[in-house]
Image (tube, rainbow over all chains, first blue to last red; front, side):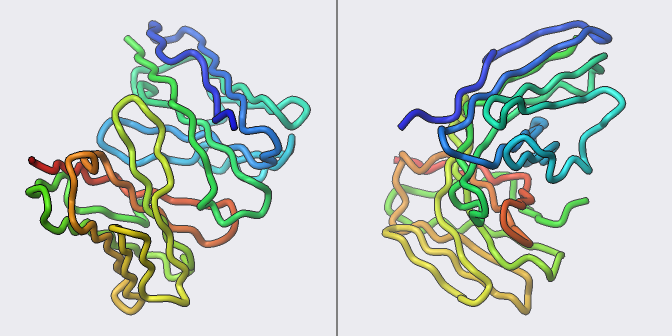
Length: 115
Length: 111
């Protein structure tokens, strides 16, 4: 079974530039999450999708971050414009609908460095 | 908000000994707790979980203990192996598809 795929693995951009990350969840997983993990901290939920609908985006900085999940499969997370404090690893995860998160599978993450 | 806290950023133990990783939480609505393990350059992988109706769950060398009155859980690894060296995240959930993570504890198991 293929895991959660994310790209790119690494990205370096200058502040005020834009960046986009892509995630392909495990086939059949209705729930998709984007997490931000700043160095030395645990993953923080940014947004959660159930199929192509948003379940929770309360911690998403909506003035600069946006995410979509077209057709309830792949998802993209965009930052525009980026700030220095956005430097982090962005993790995508997916799980079966209604699971108690113990079946959440994570991708390898995208490490973003904003300079 | 730090609803889930792992106060020890690092832990070092000798191979064969017990590793004990601790986690505290503040939200009494949490009813499901998980431990994830993360190797460098990889995403976290699920390790073990426990429901609030239990106080212990065991899976091979890994045991999670839950003390609801103290809002505390711990992960015991016995015996510890060098391959267990990783960052361990405690997570708590107040419902399906909802997780809050601690900051993680880096475990180093020395041969």
